Image (tube, rainbow, N blue to C red):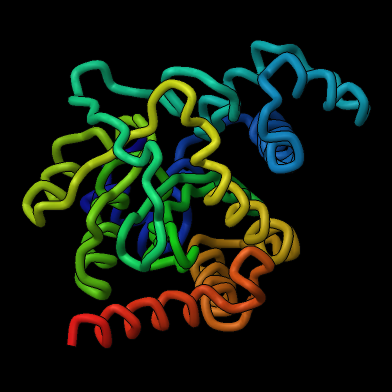
Length: 275
């Protein structure tokens, strides 16, 4: 790659393209991988408990011939995690501290009692980006989110800081054991605010179901309907959908109320009770 006075990261931001698209690969391989990842993502949303072997079988049923090693490579690239009982729900860093799970037998009955977070893959016409969202567990309200072209910690920390700035502090923050969430940069923000840190452990895979449902709705109602050309286009589309999700989309599990309604009614009830 030729040297340039403007760093690659800054050039990608100016052009609104994912950094992953800035590195040369053969057009044929890149195109095939993009198509495979899109198809694998759809399979994962339908069947989140399928691992690489069963995803291979599903691809074969759709007349897509690919070996298991290729599927495993793309799953790692996408950060795709199979939902089934296991010690870790995502790729952990053994050097990072892991915190205990605090939600056993806990009745979650108010807003800002427990927040949770997760990362998902967002396909575009060329390349892909990653999305992190922070959700209030009780109301299912999306409190903040960020897009990134790399699976680093910085965009997760940025989303966390925005949620804390706009919505105050929860009692407990629950995550999986992914390296982004166990990193000192991320946990230090929670520790500074005296927020209890909870991390999914063995047998707690089902906790991801709440936010997996969010990803499923987002992708089928927005992402798959629009082939985003750039990261800026993805950001605009996802922003519109989250606004719709929080303020207008009624949930069966919330007695046909919106996340915003449930969230703010809970806060108002607490305020009246403490007055």
